[in-house]
Length: 553
Figure 1 (cartoon, rainbow, N blue to C red):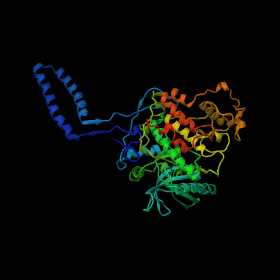
Figure 2 (figure 1 turned 135 degrees about the vertical axis):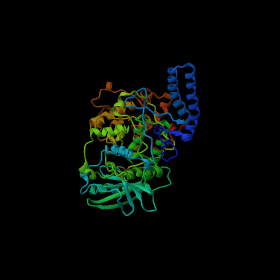
Figure 3 (figure 1 turned 30 degrees about the vertical axis):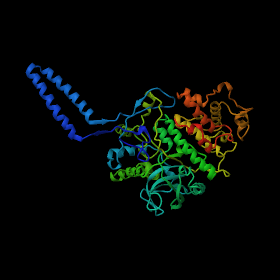
Figure 4 (figure 1 turned 180 degrees about the horizontal axis):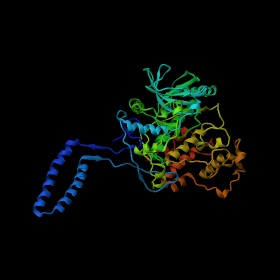
């Protein structure tokens, strides 16, 4: 049975199980069964033929024997685990289930040519950095096998952002972790300055209090140095290597959410990490969301990623785009052709991904199937041993020194930030409340329409008003932006009759079919995190002591 725990001992997700067939005693036992039963069933019909002379009866008997023999032999000799059923959901819940086909996980040494073709095809579908930005002031050209700083051997690319690329590297020195994630920033001055701010924040989290309970829930910096390339001088930051983000868990659940005990386990660790950032380091993260909460992995997982990379070389295939720098593909770039879809069908692969091909992401159904098949909404189980860390301090700031007035991804943006009323640690708590709801239900608590101000902000404020049952008037009068959206405590140009108050407790019961006895404490917990007044909102330390989080279901 395939086992997908991050520590290689417990399963992370029930949905990750694959059907496996095991023979008790191999072919020997099978022959032993066949030896006795076959002799008996061949002699009996011949005897009937001699007695009754009925050939039709004999043929019918042999057909029935063949069907029954195969069925009984499999039943006695093969242990078959029931195929796992995944309950899919698009936005809007539905009522029944579909079956998902699973591809069995192989040891990387056993991946054959077709397996590698499949991986390459999937990886090539992912968007990559713009190759035109490999110029002066831009990305650093990096090749697999390069040794950087005389210490870090490049194994493959892990990802990219508008400011940097990130590489999986092996540490050639004995001190420090065996593998690191090496972030190499663009060389332009503005990017170098941002990188220096991030390094100061990371240094603070690394050195302030390693014994604090929340310390282990922050992704820590290993090293920092500069690299010279044809495009300039680049700042490099090596970090401890981590696995997929919580977004990938949500994708894996097909946005059904995860079991409530898993939500508690994850949120508890996030709050411990925030307690360390807020109370000890005096740092505001400013971008708490599922993408920035990463799952801890072990060396076996990392070796599996590297093993897949090595198989491309061994089999003589070009690396996928996502493994190398985008400038390597300039002359070979092409649109995916219809024939490529045949590869997808051939391998029964029905999903895309944004993290390196790994065991954490199951095959999801195609777009057509997801919107035509009936579905159920059961949450996905995650291991109680899951460990997470808060990542990406690239947008973080100090309590007394902010770098930007506008922070946070829109769906997780705190009310005071929208209103321009200033922000501090409570902004992170608001985002945590939004994320907790999303983990439990698979859907965002607030998902405003539009992507431009002020229309998106107004829609966001309407959603907050409806979900919280209103916004106190004194809050609507505080902030640089309040006049754009409020007048006398009411939303501008929004008739009250069009606002439908639907509080979190009722949403959980009416839309997600929770029992009210379960919805009440969870809704109470969330409302303490998305309290409109930042001064009354729970701190991370207070939230850790909340009744819902402390309760044992």
